[in-house]
Image 1 (cartoon, rainbow, N blue to C red):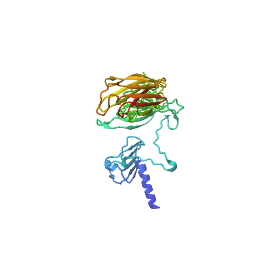
Image 2 (image 1 turned 180 degrees about the vertical axis):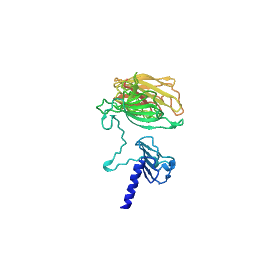
Image 3 (image 1 turned 120 degrees about the vertical axis):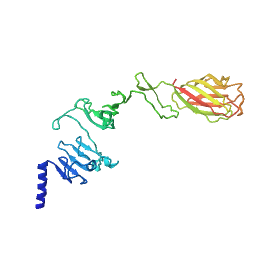
Image 4 (image 1 turned 90 degrees about the horizontal axis):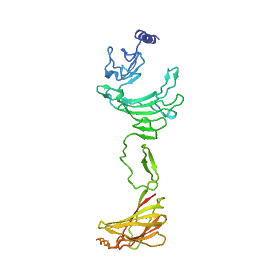
Length: 353
């Protein structure tokens, strides 16, 4: 009982005489001071190394961890103590306490009698400030800000991303994202040049959409742009046929370009128009030879093409090497090779005309 009385008397005396309490230190530097490593001097100010394990509460309510001179409500300093957990903040939740959160809230009025925010008043921010030009410039740093966007009765808020002191991205209270604009009017509103570095280079399908920009820069799907698809046959022996099934639902009205080549770097191209099941020969050429066509049926869906006088080629092709017949039936194109050597053909379809 005597020992307890002495300790209590010492604490009371220290509190009344100096208005300061020290734990593990007889030289408290604030209203409440803990020296974690018990390494502070008996007199004078602790060094930066000695302060690194200290906790202090000043009379103005400021709390310092790792410093005895906090400049805000809470200041935590790690001074050359290495990276990792020494300067990390770890919020852990388990079971029914999952989803730990860091919460910023703001109001007008006072703590005891708060009042609602008004539109465009700040709520909170996370700020990153570099030291430059021998100082810390808050306005030149990067921040994530939130401002109230309601009328005092709802909870509308926005988010603003600032880098190097300038706002770069804003997410409005309705979810619109603005890049280079503070008033985004669509889900993604970009004011400035855009660049796509990687894009799918494979041939599109008939279900793909074509996008264009209107006079206001708004992207829209264009439905009346012709679609282009490419199909190829396997190698077709002389007087044999190969079929191509066109999957484009707009194939009713289309342009068909049939091409073929040989080992002598010569190319044949022939163009047809299609209207329903009827095709019309528009023209063809195999290098310097103009194609000649013959309608093979009364329905207008079967045509024979010949290129008389084409030069022979080292692959064995003679003057008939580019000749072929084409037959249209629904969405199927049948090509019959009328040349003297095997050949594959390519059909390029331009539909939605």
